[in-house]
Length: 367
Ligand code: IPM
Ligand code: MG
Image: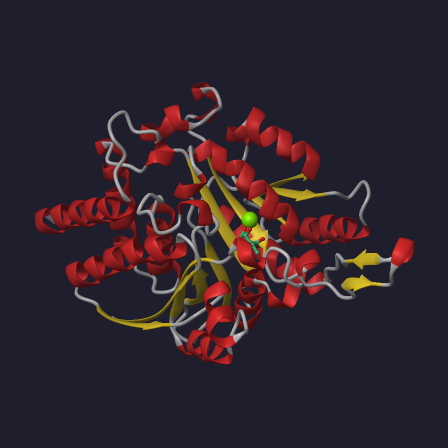
């Protein structure tokens, strides 16, 4: 198979974690006999520096042409006070919208080897395995009107939370279909005791559930969900929710996995002729400018995102499985970065990438 990938390192630690992710991707391609062509583009702060635009036209073109896009992270403190359209984050919102990747899958897996890393009691976390399905191209992030206007006491900031039936239906179908391949349980999270968008959300998700008799559905208010995630995480299988709630809950859920550096994500849009998904793959962690360029960042979220890409955009299930097994082996070996609090001296970003490649190589040789 020929894999045409766009690589967008972005800002901060995005650069170093995607370097390792690319290394792993090359290893997998070689071991399994696929050819790989990688193009590169700019997004976020790096793109503002070069083009004055966080999502340049050239990047849009490359993303639309590629089979799949692998992204590091965006965001730099120097833009903290810039207007929204000149912020790196706008580049990320731009590419998500341009690719139409409306479903953001954020699996939270609690590896046994990392149990001690979670600040939660081990018995609460052990065996937790959930998938957050975050709606990614609607809601407060994109709703209009938006902006800041007026002056003095009347100066006003506005954002709009809006969802159409069609937007809710497609993410609900995605959640139910994913649940069918897991433990067959969907929890839909909203704030329907206050928000009209949530009332519509709840009604439409319930309607869609009638088409999935093998999957159970429950509804939970987002504030309660925030609490249940740390009190009883094992009660969750698939969690489906709107954009902003999903953003917040997925950071919270990261504590279950021991470190946000562990979390991969896949953002999926429509299906292509080949039957594979249009996809954007990125670790959930941000650009972490405070540790950028120090070879300290955990690359496993980015490497896990490569696994997700192989699975969803190319249907290469065996290859994806090889990546997750290699990750698990590296975790067990203890050669991990500082965020995972190893007992010995922490490994560097590149050492972790090398260790994953070595684990892959051993498996390929013995296969
Ligand atoms: C995420 C990030 C982004 C988001 C930011 C960087 C715009 O927090 O992917 O979770 O809010 O979607
Ligand atoms: Mg976030």
